[in-house]
Length: 278
Image (cartoon, rainbow, N blue to C red):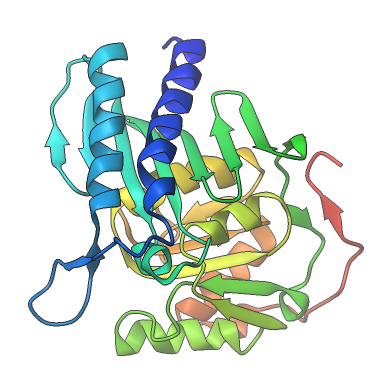
């Protein structure tokens, strides 16, 4: 595994996606299509053109790798590595003009994600983690990723994309966690995981996701020192139910509440706030 080539390829894909998405963001010419016959799941020209641009980079630089993309499906490979692409995670935010969407790039081997990137073109922020790298690059320079530690559940901040999360049973589990934390906020899509990776929030809980929604963010959060699993504590890179936490302690408490085992929770204690690597 040529790490330098992987880093350079991911950067080239993110740059190509920026060139496709930014001219259409907040554009009057953007007209979303609906993937569903019932409900609303938008897709835009920007989604399609950005994924095509990323696939073109891979075809030139790493043609032996497999691809899993939201808009154009799976392409087989022979290297044992799979790039997982979501050209615009948060298309609803994109068409609303809100800068909480992002381009997701993940790289998986047989064990799961080994590298990931969350790129926000409008703010110029690039969160990158895995293969020995964990950094945020922005107009302010470069800084190391690092989750926030020492926060009790009762003082934690929780993010999720939709307030009406999942099924009725999933919603009940989520509400148990939400009722136990200090602050719950909604609607940030992949940017929630980016904020977790730099110590701004403490928990992200979602349901009904796909691999392309989470492969990149998992690698970023893990590189920052966080924990990401499904609601049963197992691997999360296949999608479905996701719980990402800054610390093992918060993760265990969130799992207990999600599973309806509130009695396992220890009394909340406030500790001095620290950040991984600080």
